[in-house]
Image (cartoon, rainbow, N blue to C red):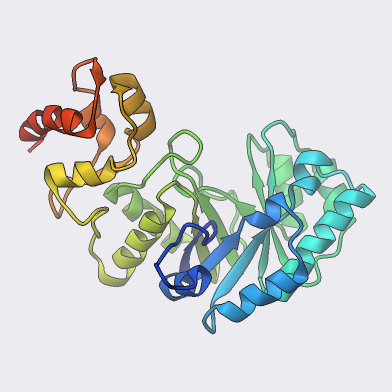
Length: 306
């Protein structure tokens, strides 16, 4: 039996449709949302209740565990850490969220003892826990997680889970850039979709977290539903480059442009996506005074790219 693949992203704050409720509109576009604000602050239960009421029937929430658990108390079962974990579970229950995402920092070297000690000290009230380990994880740690029925959360564009949970595969997709500065090209969209289909779990949740996460999420939904690759802008060629660079600040050096914008994609044609880095790497090493100044130079590069 094939998995049900659900697509969403990290929050709805930037899903802006003028005159519309952002969360409700987001829920019409995607299958689920990962609540990330719960990592940074204690969400009042009344606010979670409001969120639940504002979405369409059947819409799914997942919740990120508060940072006090992982980044302050570092998975030690202190009273404060357990309280923060318990509140995160309450948010899940209020939202009817099936999964709590726990992210550990790269500086925390997990051991089987740490994993067993903490997760044996807390109650999940029927909510599943997914653990995203930022950094290397030993086979002993992964075995301890599996023994505790914890889901191994990975970025499918980088890593396949070491084991598949029977119910849920959960992927937090950041890509191969710096932090969350990335967009997934057509081949990567196909590869992520293929890996999702290879999961033996009943449900696969793909949670996009890049700076263009709504575009990435929408594109994989279109690909899975219609078998075609949607564009990343409404234009092609130099006009698409202009759209991709709409937030660029000038004056800017070649290095600054490559660093800040090279990760973006543009539509060379309706069928072809190109990463801006491949164009910006070939422009003269100088300071560009305006977007028009830069576009005049890029036009020459596009002629050779075609």
